Length: 310
Image (cartoon, rainbow, N blue to C red; front, side, top):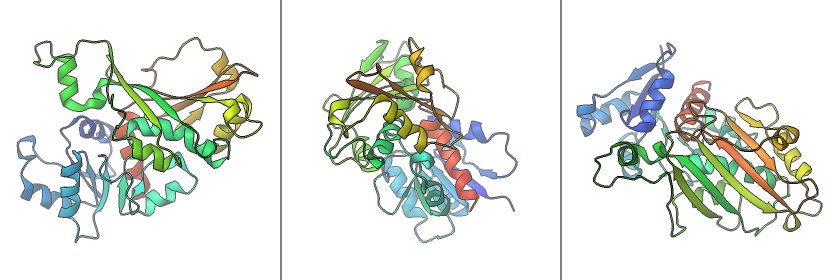
């Protein structure tokens, strides 16, 4: 019998992308709720409890409500794409490449929290350096990032694409999260193994999908002897054998004059770069991904496949 998958919130941006990725698959059975019934609690509860894996593409409160609906049903497993459970100790964090043990944790978990798009990029370059002892305790980490506007969901998509929207956004690029209290910061701190919360400066560009996350570092403030080469080597070792995360060779990175935030749009992979002058005082760690790919829907399908492999 095929495993049954229910996408709760399938008509939203993330849910639609998950459905698109699963459209040609014959190894699972997709349960579906008509858009007109998406607020029908009884129907949702029946579908949730009839699934082998439920993928929640909902706001935080609605995700908590959905989890409560299946609390007594140990057969149902959950992938939550909201921020509701990303720092919960009893939920597996759904970034499979984050650690060598992470795929098994995801495979065996009943509850998996899908990472945020910005944290995926930030954690991808921060955590390996923490584990390698290169990034010391207390280092004042800053994370600067730009995302495609689909990361803001249907509301932001309408604000940018609908010329008649009452709160139209016409700027080609804008900052937000200005008070520096973004909801992704606890996630970055916890899974980045940081003692201090990073300063996170997010922004949005007028392109639908894509993302660049930057973490600049002072070499003199890292572990003794840290260099451009040793930092790149730590990342390359951490992701050795991975098919989704690529650490771009230093020689290739040195030839680049620019990076296009949309390069990986529509893909579920991620590229990591280490930039800096040989013998220089600084490095800039850069993650390139699709905010709806490895940053959301692609990661959810990857986690689902790991869970189905149990």
